[in-house]
Length: 297
Ligand SMILES: C[S@@+](CC[C@H](N)C(=O)[O-])C[C@H]1O[C@@H](n2cnc3c(N)ncnc32)[C@H](O)[C@@H]1O
Image 1 (cartoon, protein in one colour):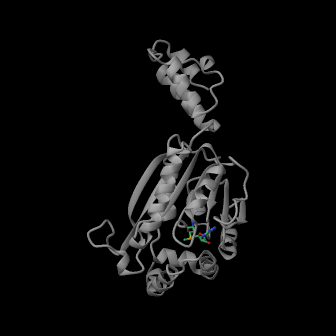
Image 2 (cartoon, helix red, strand yellow; image 1 turned 90 degrees about the vertical axis):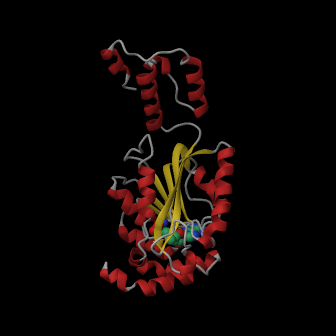
Image 3 (cartoon, rainbow, N blue to C red; image 1 turned 135 degrees about the vertical axis):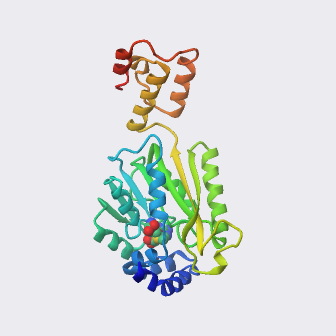
């Protein structure tokens, strides 16, 4: 930590200069040069986004199973993978637009697959509905991933799967954040996904300039603020979610396993089932043995 503190002035200059790069090619080139020092530098900046985002994702209900296939978009050197692995998630794929950042991620050895891909210019190298969860941490800002790339994240997410995103909320990123939120809200209005969480965070990372720390706002002690969003994609649910939904219907509404039969489809199918079958139903309280048996869906 003393070493990290010692390098802080140099890091503030390096990272501060990068904020002035607003074209994607220039930004990716910057990341290529930064790659060997990235982990130490962001430790000096007390960058907390990877652990906060992974906490948010893994606290969703019903919980993601440890077998979940997770895509880390703009994975960089793999700090998000390290957080996921620490919580028992091992089925990890990563993509990034910087070859040198990917090289560091490869050395870390936590991803099953790593691919070079520039979001906003090309599609993700994955089929539709491939992942139980998709994260993008630290890459939603000017000159990095454009908001127009968000639907691409949804395309590769399984119906009922989770999408976790972060952005900074310091003054120079507020215009981007506004465009981002308009995109996220439009997708929600269109029925593509539902927001589960929008979690503002005061201490995101140390500010590179006093201009980014606004007195009287939530930014304190020289930190800039940020925000984490978590969405669930609408549509057909993956087996682990459907299983939990069926279990809840059986346990709390007294439905029979047979009655639930082929309930394996969409949000709409589940709502329709509940509306048709559950009016006036009482929970199954009478036969504990029978009740327990029915809980195994
Ligand atoms: C601040 S780093 C974040 C890395 C990692 N997610 C983390 O939190 O440590 C941003 C990463 O996004 C990548 N990146 C930026 N714009 C991108 C784009 N349009 N397509 C793919 N990767 C991009 C950069 O190469 C860099 O590795």
